[in-house]
Length: 174
Image 1 (cartoon, rainbow, N blue to C red):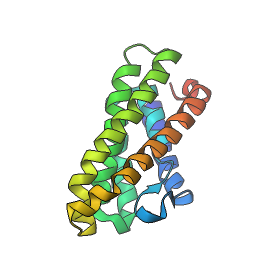
Image 2 (tube, one colour):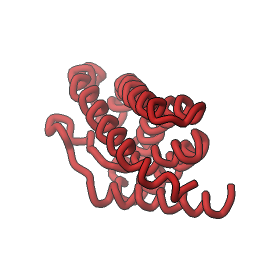
Image 3 (spheres, rainbow, N blue to C red):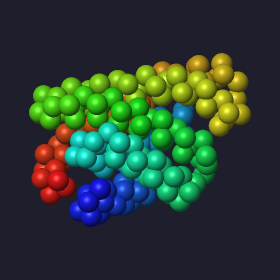
């Protein structure tokens, strides 16, 4: 990686962490552990500007830093969940967009990323949330409509904001 790319990724990582610190709220009171935050937007921008691997690298770095600072109460499970959620989006959207960088491909990539992240997180919550909450899986199954809606909303908002912001910043990054 060149110095400009490394510096840009560092800046985007910092923006991601500050974003979580400034903007974080529960969408559904019934599942207050599911909090919206804009941390993924700089990661998605990184993925579109530099590729899937740099996007995954930034996902891991941001997840760990966020997990030991601003989101420390969720512990290692929160770190893992963030890596899996964001990583699933980064892989699916990055592979689509970085093959051919067009506006249409960007929209398709973002849409597919939202669907993949939502699906992965429904399944992943069935595995990890009983451990996190110390609750029977049946309780988590009853929360699946909230989990699905939350992930659609969070990924959808972050994808939409990425679509709006990426075009404005990508030339400065590359």
